[in-house]
Amino acid sequence: MAQVTLRISGYVYTVGCEDGQEGHLQAMADEVEQRITQIKALGGQSGEARLLLLAALLMADELHDLKTELAQAGAPAAPAPDPALAKRLGRLAARAEAIAETLARP
Image 1 (cartoon, rainbow, N blue to C red):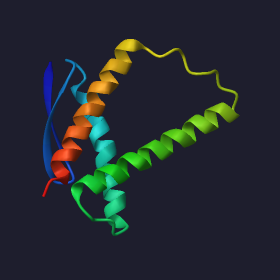
Image 2 (spheres, rainbow, N blue to C red):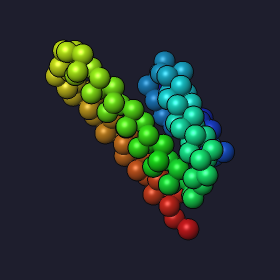
Image 3 (cartoon, helix red, strand yellow):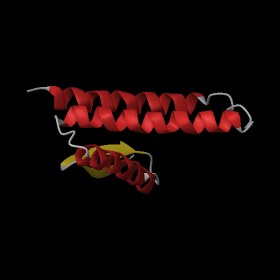
């Protein structure tokens, strides 16, 4: 398992990922950083956990809009869930929650 050091909003995080996925993980961190920069530009600086939450909500909103556009365009339904992917996403969600919990502590 590879380790990637990510810098998001001035904080450094070391995150594990599958070998060969380092570049993809860095690109995803860059996407999060971009959303945080947008939030800060609007004057929304009220703690790291809140910034990460707002960035996640922005990304979820974009994903929702894309799914809606695909549905309206008559795109085929999403394929059946991949159990391995679901497990991986579950691990990533648990890590994100742990990071958010750590950041929320005084």
